[in-house]
Image 1 (cartoon, rainbow, N blue to C red):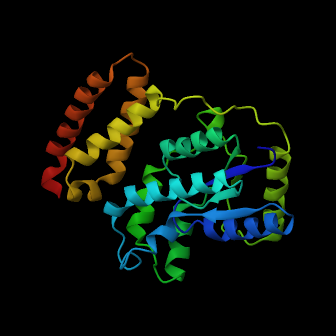
Image 2 (cartoon, rainbow, N blue to C red):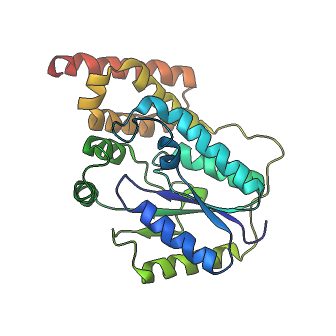
Length: 263
């Protein structure tokens, strides 16, 4: 659809994504582009007590509801700014496939704020998000750019996202992109995840199923680094998913044996 887009934001909590999204959406509205913001925070606000205590148990259903709202909105011909963390590559690929299905332009903006700055801003706001959650997402963040569809149109390394110059620059770059013909076509059938995406999902799942919450919380950074290094290693070999499962399960168990006494 001409001049229609799904724009996904990438960034850790307290990076300024919501501020940026609101100012950018206002600019699009003023210039005649029907644009709405869809974010998981709106869904979380519907759950009693969620704002007082973050609960990861709710996150899968929140993500599913958010994606369904995006689909319904695109079906109505609305432009979407997805104000979410989108820290996993697989999350961004979900958005890419949705945009592809509706024949919308797919764009990404990476708000790359240092961890220290995000925590400082979070504390100034009265700690609405536990600092541990910000640190956790920072450690897990898959930086974009590995695939052509995952390259951000803009990377912003500032927390001053109310600056009119930043908003106008981002707006101009997005407009120049959406005025060009869409290169991709909607798939006739739902595509299967590629091997990289399957490996990514499998290794995360194995960690969540095998590692206790206490170990996961204390050694999250080490587990994340171990997983990423393992993925680099296995991508050089032609292992099946079953072989990957066996090898990574052993790696996790070895990790637990070494660190269990430290919990």
